[in-house]
Length: 78
Image 1 (spheres, rainbow, N blue to C red):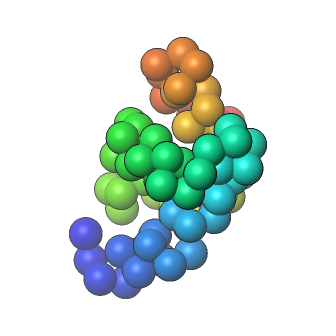
Image 2 (image 1 turned 180 degrees about the vertical axis):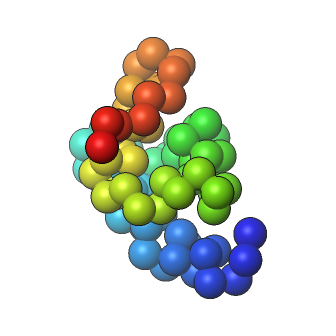
């Protein structure tokens, strides 16, 4: 993962996604972070070639929630 891409994820996207998970799922920060980092959605987001970084934090949260509920990752229609 190149440095610029890693910075975008760690400074901009991931904190917003983890905050959404914490608020909506009523988890503390550490639990929300662990839940996200253990997901397939995070694995896909961390690969620049998937271009998932262009989705909003809310869209990524919804993808994560769907994965949590069904075990499947579904990409939104554009």
